[in-house]
Length: 235
Image (cartoon, rainbow, N blue to C red; front, side):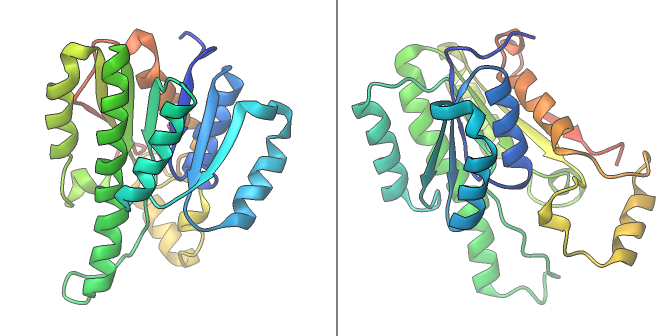
C-alpha cells in the first residue's frame, strides 16, 4: 500500500477514540491531517501534545459538523488557503443507546444531526472541492449496527454513483465493538456478554480500523466504491 506523502486528510471527530487512531495512522504515513472536534478542548489539546513530533502536519479545527454554516466556513478557509483535500474520513458520531419506546425526541435528533446530517454536510462540501481536482476518497465510519438492525448506508451508495466518474470513491467502514472510551462506560458484565457474542471473543483495536481506512483511502483502492467493510470479529 502506498504512503500518503503530499496528501491532506480530514478526519472528523479526530481527537479521541477511533478517530484519534485514524489520524495518527495517516500522520505516520506522511499525510497532513486536519482533525476536527466539537466540544472537548482538553482531549484535543492533550492529543496535540501527544502528536507533537508531527509538528505542522497536524491541524486541529473546532466546529460542529451538524451545522452547515460552520462546515461552510471550514471549507471556505481551505479554499482561501488554496489547499487541496484528497481524503475525508467522516468519523464524528455519538451514542445514545435506548430502546425505541424509551428514546426521547432530543436523543433521536442529536444522533441524527451528528451521525447523519454531519456526514452529509461534510461529504457535500468535500465532493464539490474534490470534483475540481477529479480525485478524492470519502470513508464513512458507520457501525455494525447498520447491518444488524439499524438504518443502512443509502446516502453513501447514492453518492458513490454520482461522483464515480470524477474518480471520487465513497465507502463505509462498519466497526463492531472497538476498544475506545466510547464503550468504556459499559458495565463489566455487559462487556463479557458482548465478547461472548463475538466469534473472535475479543473487541477490536483502533489500529485494525485505521488499517482498513487507509486501504480504502489509497490509490490502490481506486475500483472500490459504494461498499461497506465490516470490522467486527465475525459478528
